Figure 1: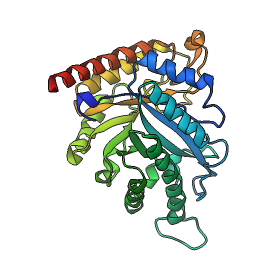
Figure 2 (figure 1 turned 45 degrees about the vertical axis):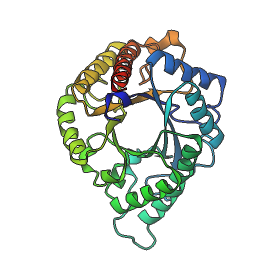
Figure 3 (figure 1 turned 120 degrees about the vertical axis):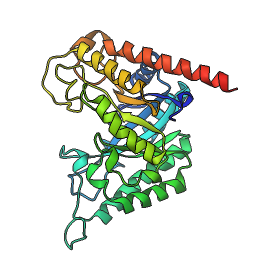
Amino acid sequence: MNETQHYVAGMTWGWTGVRGEWASERAGHSLKEMKEKLHVNWVTVAFAAHQDHPQSTVISFEEAPTVTDDEVRWAIGRSKELGLKVCLKPVVNCKDGTWRAHINFFDMDVPCEPKWSDWFAAYTRFILHYAQIAEETGCELFCIGCEMVQTDRREREWRQLIAEVRKVYSGPITYNCDKYQEDHVSWWDAVDIISASGYYPIGEWERQLDRIETVVRRHGKPFFFMEAGCPSREGSQYLPNDWGLQGSPSEEVQERYYEAMFEACEKRGWVGGFMLWDWPAHLYDRGSAALNDDYCLYGKRAEQTVWRYYKNKQTLASADALNDE
């Protein structure tokens, strides 16, 4: 995946995956527009299940609001009909609004307190359910977790989970670590591809890529950004991970951010691509794009920036493939 011919020109689709929104004409239109407007060759089908709070050990994924299994299969199938490769990415969120990075427990089991062992048992059941669907539907990649910073230190449990996933899913596995955490995961050797969230301030890309490169070289694994992007909002170029930042809508801010991100990463041959953030199942009206201040690129200036960059990367990939024959 770090070679040009395997470049991930991707987008994350469907977040937050509310039951009943997928498997519809409107969702199908969204996928088609994503393919045409961005020139993507990959899609991450992403959705969330919930636990009540960061110390809960019950993960509810078989009930609303999580999308149904049929909806997940629909999204994968429709993506493949469009000629896209698919990464399936089930995510756990906290119902009380706490970011999943804060899911945490005592390092040692304590009677009458919630335990890592109970949480990982629930999480393993959740992940294996979707790993089986990924196998049945022929997903080209499976993501076992997203930005779960406090869990990253639980090396033994993650290795055990990966071993269980490999019993039911035969494709490559990745873990989406959070920004700034690439050099804090001790079990990269257990996955096939290293991936991370790339929400770095516009002037920080070179420095952060220098740091990430040492991790990628050390492990000798392919790497890509499982998430990256910037809201079309004043100030977001400096805090692209803050979806609640106050500011006026600005297509220019988003456009300049993407240009800077692509320029910095283009110099690093080991960056194998992006699954940009994000493209909803239900799009806003294209004519009102200038009023939308979220991450979605639909109808905005950065849409063309991504289309040009992805088209160029795929043209180069095709040329390299012909030269290799």
